[in-house]
Length: 268
Image (tube, rainbow, N blue to C red; front, side, top):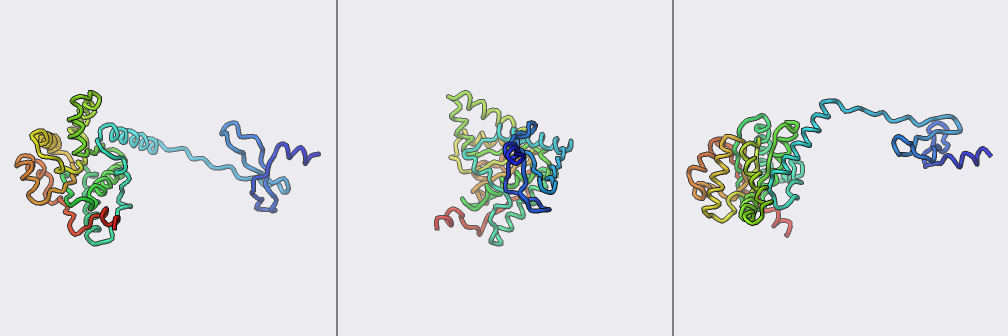
């Protein structure tokens, strides 16, 4: 009779007692406080499963989580991008199988450390399509976030998408407001990634936007990816923009040479 009564209230769940080897039993009902199954016990020898120990987050942990939430909210609100997949990039998943790839990775890591230390850095990651420039720029962003415990605010601007959105905003007020907000925060963000600068068609409109960019970012850390190499940047945008970019850029240019297009390698 007792066994029949126990079967109504308790159940086995595949775990055996570490002392005598009998199957442990636990109540069939859920814990009212947690909504989960309760811990079991051995009806043969009296063994009880230990209760889990709960740790209370420290004030510092709670503060860092709040900063992280605020920083990522800022990033999502003011960044402009065409695909969210780009934000899966980290230093850990960058393939550095050649000496050239290892070198550009190391230089990007060093520059990220310097930006995290609040040094003003203008860096240009230059090279052909598919060599990993955007990957490492985004990896730099996450490294800066982590090193500063999310105390620095950053933005990502896909340059061609910015130009397209600004033009489309003429007839779309909501889009125009978003672009205007992004351009406004270019003046104050701790660091900004400008992705694919130079891939756009040269017009008076695009040149004015580049001039505005470097007026805003002249004394603020900026990470640029571009396929413009050598004197091509100066030729495309003129001496004034080049001078402002070079203000904190001496020695910080990273050339992605002797690195194959990973997209073509994947096709092969």
